[in-house]
Length: 370
Image (cartoon, rainbow, N blue to C red; front, side, top):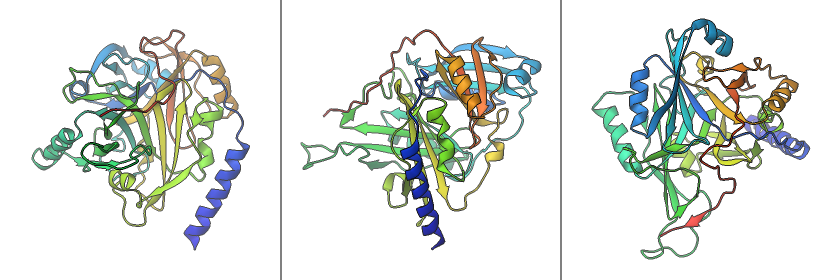
């Protein structure tokens, strides 16, 4: 009865909020530009992500004094910006190698641990990746938790009669949870989305840039994410909804037990179909390590966007009482600022006035292939 009352209250609150939501400002905001990873072992991190197709395109050394000004962390660090193939509009990686690490981060933890972050890539061989991580877990004794790939029809494309000649149209996905990084991989069958997951031919593991990003959070009201639209200019894909163990994709990826469920809400930039954000707020008691989801600790602790309208976004963020840092140059000489949202998620907003070479796709287009 208590759970039913909770769900009813949330449903009524969400319905009211959606109807009352103001128009989204035109901020020129990108999709998520970078995943920002904290570590004290930069050589391992660069070697690891090289096999996924990421190469260093810029680097900078930063003193403890500068780090304190930019990030509020009293430690010198070296920053590496990495790009996958030719995709420079979204899905990059920034590795922050801290001289003195502030903490262990969320680390190796159960699926749906509060504070967890997951970065999502397209692959052309999901079973190969499963075998690699499964072997690393069983024979290499590494702390990787890998879920078996599961097939699903996420977009309602697998319609009509299916046989050998009329082949299934679906996506297969799995998750890999580790102390160093959390992944989600997906492989498409029977369809293609231009501009959403570009796999370079020479990439060892046949993987793309980061296409979207998952956040496991705990908030008293889903309304607390509304600043993503009203301050940053992102669009909610649809109304918040409840997913649970009755859906085979979430059940497998999040290792849901019978009776498990969570609120889900997705956001996307009007200027790029990639760099989407997906938020999951579990219903019920979960392990909470969000206190270690801080800049300066290990793991994914920050994400970035870029915009040609930095001053406008800064004013909106300030107006929403999100307490941004002052606008200043980051380690790559880019005008930027940082703020942390109500769910404990930190963002760096970067000013870019020139268009990326890789033109972002703004319309989601499903193309069926054999």
